[in-house]
Image (cartoon, rainbow, N blue to C red; front, side, top):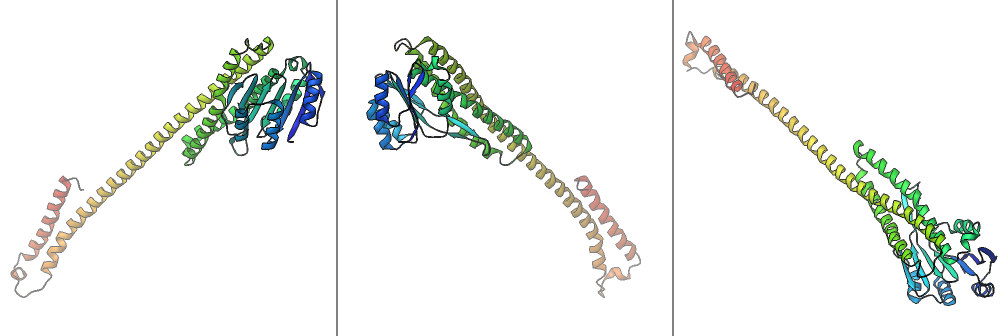
Length: 338
């Protein structure tokens, strides 16, 4: 049996630590106390043995065996079936690790089936055993303590997510290309965190409605309301984180678009500057080409060229070269090529 701890309590004090379920059942009946049985990743056979011993509803047992349930509370006669999604922040990997905890609460027993390292139920049991007046209130007090521990362990998760979001805000304005991937990854974790925490509010409200019907002690009323207040703060932080990440995505898209526009503007300015340079080079090339053309014609040395024997031929050629150059310069200047 994957028993982590197994104890029978009478008036808030541990009176026995049985080694088997059969022994637990016998001691519980003899002393008229209640049993608190903690299981860690039990097999199907072990779960069904517990279900048979305490007459657990088959639908609740199937949910416990299937796992991957959402946070919820269901009542089967005088037995409560509670599913919780504890979480812990893994600092080295900067991610949130989610677990699953199933709790069966009956008139004289509590059975916890834990599928992850979190929450620390040994700490819950130790704290409750140190406050026998609270433990004496019965299985409902144990459920309160478990809920309180799960909600308390959300605190470091909230702090870790908040730190990651602060880092993302710094990355946004540093132009880190990996920031979009990190935003999406963190968004998925925040959504999963909301799925784990938001149903708790409805669960607590449902439990409060049944306080009078099932004669829950007034002291537990107060403790559960306190846990509800903490839960509401956690849920509000989760909603704020999701909104911040959506804003971060919007800002990231805006910044990427702005950088692209700046790059396009820079390319356009560069292209325009290059175009102006090409115009100038082309203009001067055309101006220099005109005298070359005249000189080339007069340098052919044909016998039948009237200008070769003309007295004013040389000054005329020079003047023609100068006139063509000046004309081209004026034309290019008017068109702002020079």
